[in-house]
Length: 336
Image 1 (cartoon, rainbow, N blue to C red):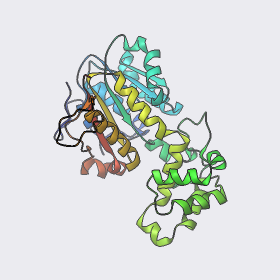
Image 2 (image 1 turned 60 degrees about the horizontal axis):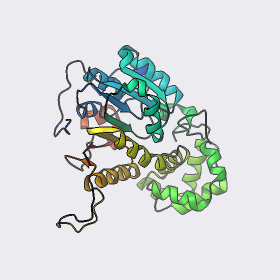
Image 3 (image 1 turned 180 degrees about the vertical axis):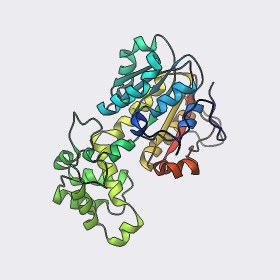
């Protein structure tokens, strides 16, 4: 069975070293994944299937396939551009890799459709790398970044669904306040929601200007309100909040006993959901007083070595500053 590492390991021969020396051209430049070696080390080298539920550019999948020659990877992503890039990156692995369209909230249905690829093999790990990719942030036309002027889009799959601008045309003030608070903007949530409702911005620069006018300069220096607003809209447009718990439940159901549930999150709201899910799995949702035997019938579904998150080291953060906010949590499925 796999075990959570207690310290960092030196990269294995043949493994892609994450950081400044990693390739950034072609598919490798689409997205710089975080905690690549840590993810690979959490996966058992068994003849089974690993599901990368947020495939992106295929960085984690490529590392897992290289590190574990007996493993096959089923990669899922809703972004058509990401699937093209990942398909090119994983092509050298032949039939050990398969890329499919979908969102992780549809995991059970996708696994059922892909039964031929699974070919009866167990699912040994499911990986979630949450949030937006480096490429999506850096592509100005996608509307994810507050650093470039662009239409306020923010859809992971730009071929379907309402854009962020369209969402703001239909949402009410109280709902927007709740979304902002859920994403860490507690002090100025009402003020920001009211200002956004009045202006109904259509571009990223218009939204940034609304935030700058609504939040006093001193407060802007203390906290990135615009970042929280963009984050809240992105999660709402892509239905990330409701989908996350559903995806985690479906992943746990799909795993074999001792299979690893691996989740990387980038902001406190998502990390709290993941941490609570793993803690409930470890305790079985036990409601008995601490220190007394359990009599409520709780049945654990996960085990952990620690509830503490794994974080990127100084070298990785220096090479990729976006790794600073990454929190990796892992639990292993236990028999009920």
